Image: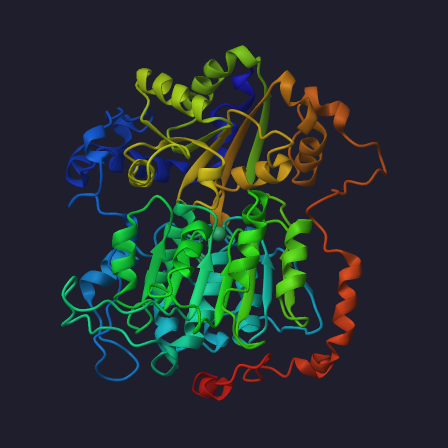
Length: 587
Ligand code: ADP
Ligand code: MG
């Protein structure tokens, strides 16, 4: 392969602020800020840090030093006073980071996504908001958004904030890294803040509650968020922990492979926001003493396309109708990066006829701020290509995607023996191992993560600068959509990133659609793909995934109750949200 073609000079262009960021990696890698401060940052900035051997004994189960991610601290409301709880500075730092670090590195290159066009479909037209201040947010939410360091809403947030606030079932299709989690959490939690006391289930007083002595309460969440993987569920939970700060809304997370007893005990302390993977959720739904869906007001399906790919259609149907409440009581929200047919069918079945859909850019298309390199590699020489790729740019957080668990294991050994700081993750690993791998990767101790695609879905780690498709996705396992998801791990929220893919003779099937993706995102087409470039005048269009079914718009017409006047602005609730009036205070 020709590494000269993407040598340091072109990388500088692709990663303008790489110098600042990779030094963070090596500083964290030492696990000791003081030591890093003593050593000049530039000294080893061009070298990967040394790997640390795994301590397998430490992975037998959670211990004091490595608690389950799902047991992380949440704001505990003591049931006293008004609607807003007191500040807890320590927890504030745990949730949002130190005040002086909060602005660092966020939204560096927002302009790149701020200009992206948003297409809106459905019977009502939603007026977008351009600032969080105009979003009618509860004051506590506005403060939490500020604490999180969000200065302006991302394109999808500009639309879903008002849409969800007005009470519409909403579908948001936006690229990975475009802020979809906050796009639903902020408006939902903000709306519930003012009325939590009225709506929420009774729960024990955390000040006096003694686990194992007092009886646990049944979890009766107001919001259920379903996500396909444990890591993603944990990530959403972490985002929810921030936005629930100083409110009585208590978030919990449940996922398969995690400690079921601990999850049940945690639910027993009260649960208003439940983030869960489908399997564990179904399990709990079948135990009425643990979980009741009767209070659910919002049901969110995140990474919805992925959920349907793994044959969860039946389970999803059960979950979606699980709340079993009067028509119109539950708002359904679907968020996804792509919008394939099975998902459109699910939406048709469960969402209100007057639901609104927002699509940012082309559904499933990639950010222009990711530089994509496709390299022709002999299948037998992939390992060499990998080391070359890893060494050809300054050390940075890197994700290496492979298609099999076996390859993940092999590559982990291989790189580790090469003295590279790597870790790996796949679905055969225990939950404790997966969490440990993610922690090592996030902290920078192991800045190279080797992973299969499923486990890495939706993962948001700041400052991932390089994604390497060691194996390109096969056409029967996700194809180009999978490619887009993977490279979306870099270039999050406007940061620039590099995606390197190894193309072998076995990848010919994805060649055509890959070439069109490269063209659409203004990338250079390597010679060995040139024969896939469409003739002049030929359509660049993609078949599947992207466009909404034009016939589907039909339903829009008969939603005329909301017709032109339906967009009467804030405060005019759609649906049968019985307590619409309770919002008035925050308009
Ligand atoms: P998606 O689900 O679309 O892939 P995420 O919800 O994981 O994206 O968000 C990606 C990152 O962007 C997260 O770290 C999140 O905290 C951050 N983020 C979200 N909204 C904003 C915003 N308005 N301003 C700055 N950062 C944001
Ligand atoms: Mg997401």
